[in-house]
Length: 225
Picture 1: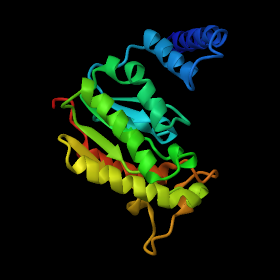
Picture 2 (picture 1 turned 45 degrees about the vertical axis):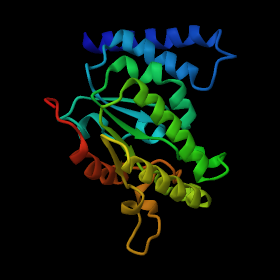
Picture 3 (picture 1 turned 135 degrees about the horizontal axis):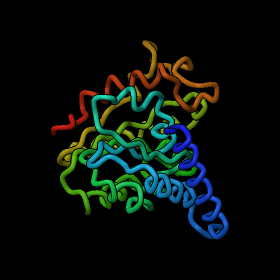
Picture 4 (picture 1 turned 120 degrees about the vertical axis):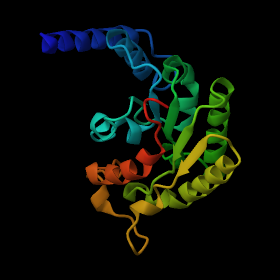
């Protein structure tokens, strides 16, 4: 019976998305994705006061997400392909309605493609951070550094620069944690490790996420906190 209900529910969500598509041609990027999330929330009530994960596909595709964080109340609202400005644009949809008790953010890697330099990536992060703090001034925020992906090797210097600027900025902010996932994903020679990635050499496999889990979990709030 539960399986039938879930099938019907997902069907309803796709039907709603179809209706959204009929008048979304002039909407901003990822508008359809946001409407699908909203439709899903109408069918399955999200948890109250979760640890909320936001950002791009490295969030959305987190391997064994619920299993990895089974001891925590978590919610994944990553958007595949999003840049920092996209996440900022939709804070009213994918952050504030959930009243999160903690935020985990991974975004900025997609920015590297179009951004002129790491400073520009940082400025977009700073704007998003400021917009979040305007509504959520005290909740803990964890920022995961931009990783080194083999398929985007030519953007590494931009990523390293953005990471440095974000890390320096967050040192002066309250209730923030910068987690360096860049260095731990390199080998002993400082080279990238393709074995941590799927065939596209951009998205991580389970081995890559194990590194992230080990670094992140000690910084997550327990349910009672």
